[in-house]
Amino acid sequence: MKTMLVFTIGVVIGGLLLVGLLLPISTLAGSGESSPTELVSNVGDIYREALVAPFQEVEQEIQDEKIARFYHRLLQRTGLDKL
Image (cartoon, rainbow, N blue to C red):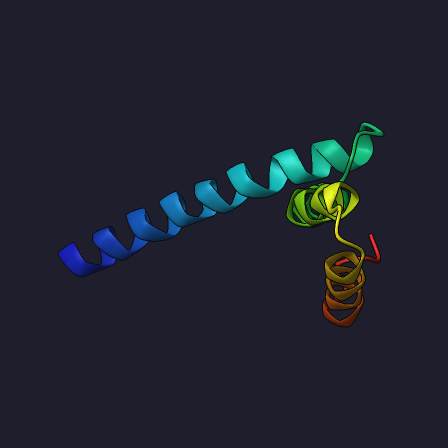
């Protein structure tokens, strides 16, 4: 009897947590705001920009022509020039 009561309470709490997680997602989708997948995509774009921007800025500051060419090839080979 006690096990059944604990199980029932667990199911109720789990259901409430699930509804609590799904309700904000459905509210965002219906309100015309960004969906969670769009937010994840935006975070990915921001991360890539934060990663690449310092390398691109440094490339503009290199004075030595040989080093600048080497650095530019390095950025091309690693894909850091394609943002």
